[in-house]
Length: 156
Image 1 (cartoon, rainbow, N blue to C red):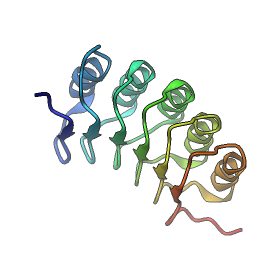
Image 2: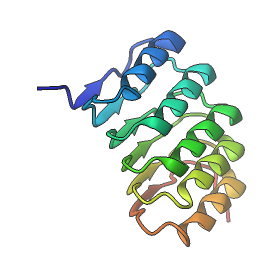
Image 3: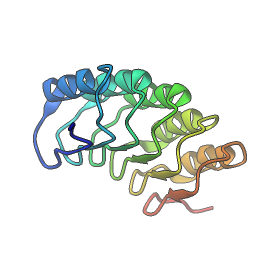
């Protein structure tokens, strides 16, 4: 029997740990359905390799990268992965430094994604512009049921 859920929260995995996990989730035949990596010291380079692996993954249903440190580049990589990933149902990016550009990149990936049901981007300082990017997607995405935008300095 294979591991279906792996929780690594509150470990300082860094880029090398992210690379190992990227290798794991992109390996054919892996059974991992849930990967929880909240507060794991994953910076832009680690998020980039995980995003690239997400493009190839056909099993993962839940990914929690909360309290990571996204930059616009890694957010675009993850957003691009969402465009082609057909299994990920839950994406948690709470307090992950997305900002306006990161929110726009994730929103672009959500636009035609047919698997995502839950997206949580609380406390990412996305403001009105980031919220507007996500709002545009809501008209196009037919599967999204739960969206959490609390604590993002949205004024309008």
